[in-house]
Amino acid sequence: AQSVTQLGSHVSVSEGALVLLRCNYSSSVPPYLFWYVQYPNQGLQLLLKYTTGATLVKGINGFEAEFKKSETSFHLTKPSAHMSDAAEYFCAVSPPPIVMRFGAGTRLTVKP
Amino acid sequence: GAVVSQHPSRVICKSGTSVKIECRSLDFQATTMFWYRQFPKKSLMLMATSNEGSKATYEQGVEKDKFLINHASLTLSTLTVTSAHPEDSSFYICSAPSLAGGETQYFGPGTRLLVL
Image (tube, rainbow over the protein chains, first blue to last red):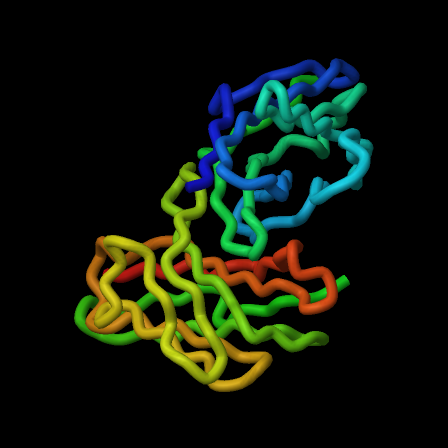
């Protein structure tokens, strides 16, 4: 079975600071990994995904994540936080095929 | 990119009534769609997998008679919450994988259900 653990339900950073949101996964098969962002009262928007190939994945809005098999991690980073980055972020794992399991989410707050 | 719509975006109903929520893939076909439920400040819980032309597959603990799913066409899946009660109040989100890039799911904007 697949599962995802997001460390830290709430992360607060200052504008311009590094953003690091942690995600660890468990999967019995090579996983597909995803990060989604959710703004209040909206659905989920895909930030980036890892399926195969290059382990450093770049996504939208300046975010990137690195798949580390040895650490079973897929942490999300952004060098410089912007106020508009404040949202809920979800890490998800999918074994091929496509049933997706989500982590509990991390709420990112950006302080001016 | 692929677009998934949901209707309605918000619904308020009385306890005991039934509510239907539609999920449409607007520019692609989806033989499979997924229904999630999200409680306030919580993650998404997969409720069921909707399969075009066949019965839905429900996750453990989800009442199939309570949450009726119909996948009538390659672009439409519906979730009907039957005899709704206040504890059914939640944010319901559907998603559909693009056939072209099957590992990516496209999410609808969600439907907020409030049962009085």
